[in-house]
Amino acid sequence: TLPDPALGAAVKAADRAHVFHSWSAQGLIDPLAVAGAEGSYFWDFEGNRYLDFSSQLVNTNIGHQHPRVVAAIQEQAARLCTFAPGFAVEPRSEAARLIAGRTPGDLNRIFFTNGGAEAVENAVRMARLHTGRPKVLSAYRSYHGATAAAIHLTGDPRRWPNDSGAAGVVHFWAPFLYRSPFHAETEEQECERALRHLEDTVVFEGPATVAAIVLETVPGTAGIMVPPDGYLAGVREICDRYGIVFVLDEVMAGFGRTGRWFAADHWGVVPDLMTFAKGVNSGYVPLGGVAISDEIAATFEKRPYPGGLTYSGHPLACASAVATITTMAEEGIVENAARIGADVLGPGLRELAERHPAVGEVRGLGVFWALELVRDRTTREPLVPYNAAGEDNAPMAALAAACRAAGLWPFVNMNRIHVVPPCTVTDSEAKDGLALLDEALTVADRHTA
Ligand code: PLP
Image 1 (cartoon, rainbow, N blue to C red):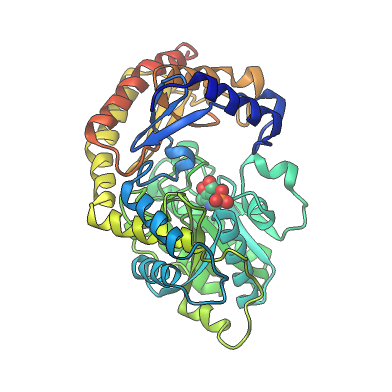
Image 2 (image 1 turned 90 degrees about the horizontal axis):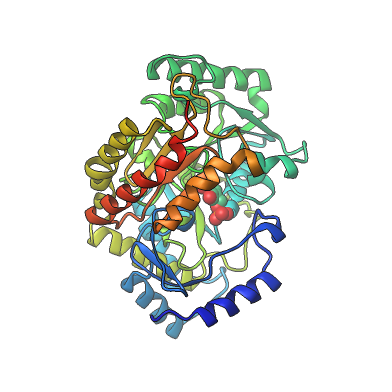
């Protein structure tokens, strides 16, 4: 497409006049007007092209505008655009069959939602009804969505202005060795102490009051902390010991992001409920869901499930999921994510860390990486304070601006840059992105001791 600044200006003007944006002070934002996208790139109306190292909100796992997914949506639109969830329709049946065929263990039933938060919402509802217990435990370093239960489960500061104080959620510390809440020095210590802390939390809350423990398999927005080996198995044991439903939130980590279909596959752990969204169809049409174990499904075999959505299992969304999953399998896209992580991004980011004093830690797997930026590698003082805004956040804002000016679109959260390109990213695109990041990081280095 040719640049068209006049159209871009009109798009921007209508946006500024009438679109109310998520998470924003409406008068303080300046959204980029986007003209198009393909694969790992998108471009604006001025003709500037950006390498999408954010996958938007870490959802375009198959890249932008994959022709097979676009065609599947077009074909489904011509056949049957919408139908109520009470009917059996082909794309919904097929999407459920394909998803259940890949989820771990006996997660054989799929309840479809329009996105991740609704998936979490329904997982919590199922856990409470299944156990007859009120409370849910989740990690401080977490993001689970913006609807009522999901935002209360969320640990990050976006919960604060939403907190009713009466949601029945108790937060605990999950393992994170670099900023260990347990003053641990090794992953083994961190794992053992985190499990002891979680079990203590359960015991002191009263196990008979706890319906569920909800965890991101690999926490995403909160910082991509890959759990130590043994942690998730340990949580599984605690859940079994106290009759608690184990919910893994794979909304961000699922569908190839970590180099496996699900992050849980790295550790062979089987939760009772697993939430998904984003990568299931790369967000081409809104879709999420809960994969449900046979035992929890049995609770609702004779007793009605008191939850539903007009668009549960929407045909266009499900058709795009069928095409996405089939294409990812046939084109080896999950394997590509694993290989790019092991051969290009992991080694490349570690090499950047050696040369840039602002990089305190590199962590991740697949196409799911975080750079933890610091002022001082010894004290590990973050480049900007927790939940910084305005002037306090200027170093991170400058770094993000430097990336964008160089043609790299980053995912930035607090004192971190997340390197989260599509699972389809090529070797040369990944290397180009690393080179652009290398240059931009000099902006962060200026703030180091
Ligand atoms: N859970 C996790 C782990 C997420 O990363 C997100 C979104 O980033 C959500 C839930 C919420 O998903 P949605 O924004 O589709 O409601």
